[in-house]
Amino acid sequence: MYDQSDPRSTLTSRPDPMPTHMHDSFFGSETARFYETAPQQADANGKTWISRGQNFVVAYSEAREGGVFARTAQPDEYALIVPDAKTSIEITTPQGKTIVPGYSVAFIPPGDSSIRMLTAGTLVRLFTPKSRDMAEAASNAAAFKGPHPNVPPFQPWPDPPGGFKVRSYTLDVPEDPSRFGRIYRCTTFMINYLTPRVGPRARDKVSPHHHDDFEQCSLALTGDFTHHLRWPWTTNMNVWREDEHIFCGSPSICVIPPPSIHTTTAEGQGVNQLVDIFAPPRMDFSLKPGWVLNEADYPMPGQ
Image (cartoon, rainbow, N blue to C red; front, side):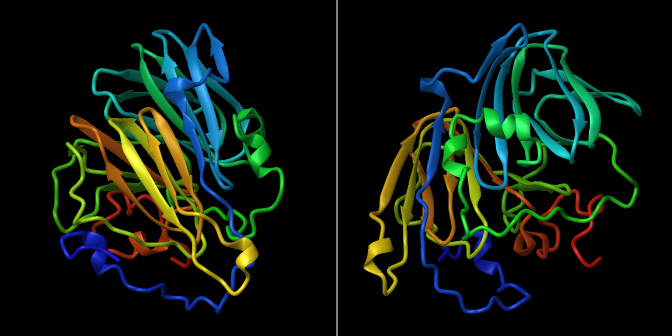
């Protein structure tokens, strides 16, 4: 349910009809408030907080100048968000070195790679659970030891036609009211860097909706938010859940599981910056012409 001013009100139904499915179990949200908890890693490179959903792992780092974040035999493509314009990094792979400026997203190929901090700054790295070391280091790893059947097993999207390499994209993109945020995708992730909201969200223009079969990670970079979740009633009252209204400052993440009805309200008086993360990419967003800003680099399934 979207307000008519919301570009998502133009989304169409899935092209592949979903079979009728009655959920027989539900899982609540997962939150990680990095600002009030100890980091999972602290060393000469800086401090890193790690949390996860079923299909993704988020590593949020307050990195020091000269810090190096290396991956050896990385099993699949991973993603990077560099939210601050003053931050600069250097990514090294067997193909060479790439300088990535701040206020960018980047996708880094499988295999060996390293990120070196040319300045101090914030880094957000996104991995799938195939990166077992990161998944096991997550503060909430125990919550995902068992199955979460409402989320299908992770399946990557097709490889890029030009092969894997470091690809980076600026977030400094003009606003377009017909487009929802600034969306980039790779084989493993879709990142939607939403338009920042100054001040609280209007209470008469919220957007309650649900996802049938994928989870959403809402990453708060600045500001304050309340994540509102409600679960459907089924014929089995034993699986009913109470509504959730979860206040999170920044930095933090909230993992929103399907099929909960959810919406998020910005609460801070200043700049409220939220980033929505999906693994693998969303098909409905990908089918909207012009929404995925790097769609030429990464094909959809079946293309």
